[in-house]
Every structure is written in structure tokens, then in C-alpha cells.
Amino acid sequence: MKVIETNIPGVVLLEPAFFGDARGYFAEIWKEQPQGPAPFNTHFVQQNESCSQKGVLRGLHFQRVPFAQAKLIRVLSGAIYDVAVDIRKSSPTFLQWVGAEISAENRRQIFIPRGFAHGFVALTDNTVINYLTDNPYAPTSEGAIRFDDPALNIQWPLDPATRLVSAKDANAPHSSQTDLFA
Image 1 (spheres, rainbow, N blue to C red):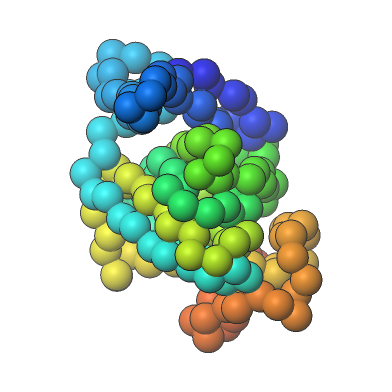
Image 2 (cartoon, rainbow, N blue to C red; image 1 turned 60 degrees about the vertical axis):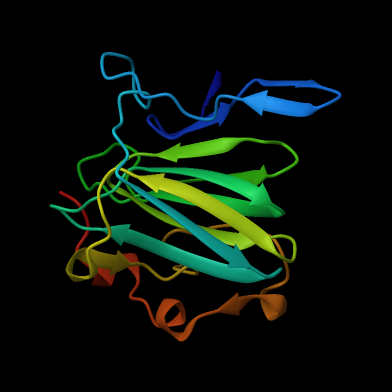
């Protein structure tokens, strides 16, 4: 598996090797290595899947301690522009973000460690996202930041007029108005 570093340490793109023939293909998508380097030493406990139409923007979401989550995001059908925002106040990259296109075609995955807010916008209809988390979802630990927070200045693709955002996400607080990680 090829590991591609981003401009924020800990957030990495993963490119699994695919082996194909006339029958189809095989790929090892994830392999935990408890004694290995991050992210391979992450123990995932929950798997989630969502389907979105083109223009659906979900996020920016995170879980607070003690249910903070690392995530491994993969697209099974379609394409997304995926964003991870560093919300660790003690980090030298605090409130910086990484964005990457993840698609069924490019077969990339993105690993997002604990201490990050996560969001994405679907670039195609019927985009299916599958992701693993290392902590179960806990509604009482849920946190969010507005996707269009000016302090973040995220450069989302697609015309803002075509984006579909839930009321919950549209009314999320700005980063200065919510409890972030220490």
C-alpha cells in the first residue's frame, strides 16, 4: 500500500495495490499492524456507509473525548472532495485543513486521526462512502463546525448555489464558538 503524506502530519492518503485479471480484481484495503506505524496501528471498531447525491455537503463533524475518532474513508461509487480540519489547539497546524478528491476511480483512501473535524461534498450522484472509525459513535460527544467558517476558508468545489446542506450542518457553530481539542 502506498502512503502519501499531506501538508498536515498524520493525515495521509492511502493507495491500495489492486491486482486484476479477466475475472476481476483483488485488493487488500486495510490491514491493522499493532506494532506498525500510524495509521496502520489503528484498531477500528465501527464501519459506516452513506450515499449522497451530487452537491450534498456533509460536515464538518467530530467526536469529543472520550469518543474522539480516527477515520479511514473510502469511496465505493462516485467521488467526493474530502476535507480534514485540525482542531487540536496545541497543534502547529491548528485550524489548517487538507482537501483531496477520493473516488471509486482513483481508489484512494484518506486516514484522518483523532483531533480533526471531517466533511465532504459529493461530486457525483449516488456517491457511496464507506468509512471505519476507531471509536463508536456517541451522540453526547458529537461536535460540529460550520462548513463555511471564514476562519477556515475551505475551498469547496462546486457552485455554492448547488450545494445541499442539512439544517443541522448549516446551523453549526463557527470554530471560535465551539469546544475544540486541547
